[in-house]
Length: 355
Image (cartoon, rainbow, N blue to C red; front, side):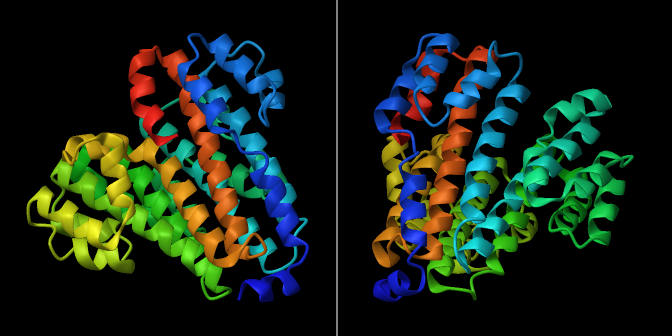
C-alpha cells in the first residue's frame, strides 16, 4: 500500500513534508507557554511560521483580532497545499477548509444569541476562507440573517452542513440553557466531522484519519455529558453513532464515570495518554484537559496515519492539516490568555503536559 501511494501520488509527499516542516517545535511551544508577557510571546513567534502574523498583529488589540489573524494564516497555508497537490488529496484538503467556514457559523450564531451589535459580529468573522474557496456569497447571506432561526433556515436551504446542526441546537438548547454555547460548539463540530466522513470512501488512509476524529469527538461527548449530567437522550443526539467509543460508551452511559473511563480506555488507547496528562482519572480534571489535549491527540493521530501510509497518502495530508489547525488554536489560546489575564502558572499547568 505505501509503495502504491508513492507511485500514484509522487508529488504529494514533498508537499506534506513541507507543511510538517512549518510546525512549531516543542521548544518553541514551551517558550510560548512560559513567556512572562505577551510581548515575549510574540517575540517567540517572530522567527517561526507565525512571523507574518506577528507583523500584522502589531500591538494586539483584542482576542478576536488574534483569532482572525492566526486562522487567516492557517487558511492560506492549507489552501496553498490543497490547490497544489494531486487528487484525491486536493479534494480532501479543500473539504477540510470547510472547518473555517463552520467556525464563522459559530461566531455568527453566538453573536445572534448574545444580541451583539453587527459591527462587533463582523470583527469575529474570518473572511480568509471564503476568499480562498470563492464563497463570499455564503458569508454575505449569513451576515444578513435576523436571528438563529433565520440562519438555520437559510443554511438548510443551501444544503449547508451547519443547517441540521442548528436545527438540533434550537430543538434541545432550551432544556439546557446553562450549556447553550457549549451545545452550539459541539453540534457544529459534529457537523464538520460528519461532512468529512463522506470522504472515507475515497481512500483507506482518509478513512483511518476520520475514524480517529470520530472517536475523539465521542470521547468528548461522553465525558462532558457525564460531568454535566446530560440525560441519555441528549447524548444520543450529540454522539456520532460510529466507531468503538460510541458503541461501548453509549451502552454503559448510565453507569459510574470510573466504569465508563475504564471501558473507553480499552477501545481508545489515547485515553491512557489523557489520564497521564491530567495525572488522574478524576472526571472533572479529564474534561478540563480535553481542549488542550486535542493538540496532543492530533499529534498522535498524525503519527499513526503516517506510520501506516507514509507522507504520500491523502490521509497523511489531511492529518498534517489537522495538526496545523490544532497548533494554530493553541497559539490563539496562549496569546489570548494574556488578554484574559489568566495566571501564567495556570496556563503552564494546562498546556505544558500536552506539548
